[in-house]
Length: 308
Ligand code: GLV
Image 1 (cartoon, rainbow, N blue to C red):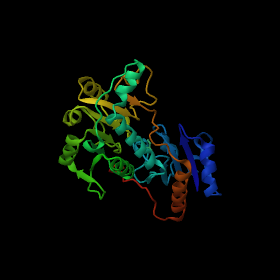
Image 2: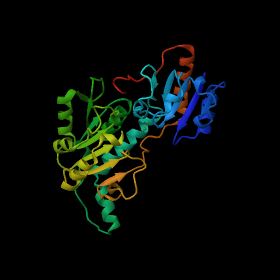
Image 3: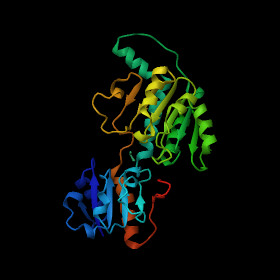
Image 4: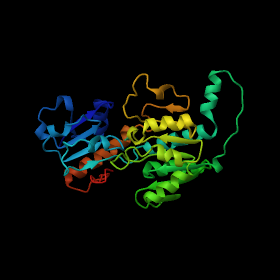
C-alpha cells in the first residue's frame, strides 16, 4: 500500500521514522515527491490545500494527523465514499485538560487583571472567585472534553456539558437546543471543544454571550470559525464577558495588527492547546493502515454526513 503525506507543520522525515518503526515496509512519500499519483492508496494529512485529493483517483482512506477532520471534509474534491479517519486522544486529552484548567484558573484568580497591574506597577488586591461557586460549561464533551471536565471537577469546579446526542459521563450532559440554552445560562466559563460543522460554525456569538451570567469567560480550543469575533469584541467591551483564552483563529497565523493581539482581556496561544504526540499518533495510524490492508474495520472513522 502506498501513501502520500501532506502537512504544513509536521516534518515528513520525523513522521516517516516513527511510522516505519512500526511498519517496516511502509511506502509513504511526501506529496512533493509522489511519482505516481494513481498508485496512492491513502493520504496522511494536516491542512492540505483545496483540491488536493483530486490528484489521487484511487484513494482508499484519508487519515488526519490530528483530532479535527474539518480540514479534510471541507474539500469537495474528496469523494463521499472515501473513509476519513481521525486521531482519538493521541496524548491530546491531557493537554486539553491542562489548557482548559489553566483558563478556568486564570479567570477565577483574576490573572489577566493582575498581569495588567504588574505591567503598570499597581499593587492592588481584588476579590478571589471560588471554583466551588463557578460553573464551567463544556460544549463537546467527547474524549477531550470529558478529560477536561474530570480535571476541572478535581479542582472543585461545577461542570456541565452539552452534546448533540445523549452521552454517558460522570457529570451532567444536556442535549438538544433546550439543553444548549440551559448550559449557556449557567456557564460562568464556556469552553468550546465542538467539531466544526455547518451547525457549529459561529456557535459562539452575541446571543450566547448575552445569555451567560455576567462577567463570563470564554475558552476556545476548537476552531476559529466557531467564534464570531466581532461579537466577542462587543461582549468584552461591554463587560458581559470578562475575558477569553483563545487558541484558534479564523486565519492562522493571526494576522499582524489584529485587535486580538493587544486586547487586555484576551490571552492567545498559537494553536498549541494540544499538540499531536507523534509516537502515540503513529500507533493509531499504523493500526489503521494494517486494518486497511487486511480489509478489517477501521478505527476513528468519522461519519461524513455528521462531520465528526
Ligand atoms: C488540532 O487542532 C486537532 O484537530 O487536533
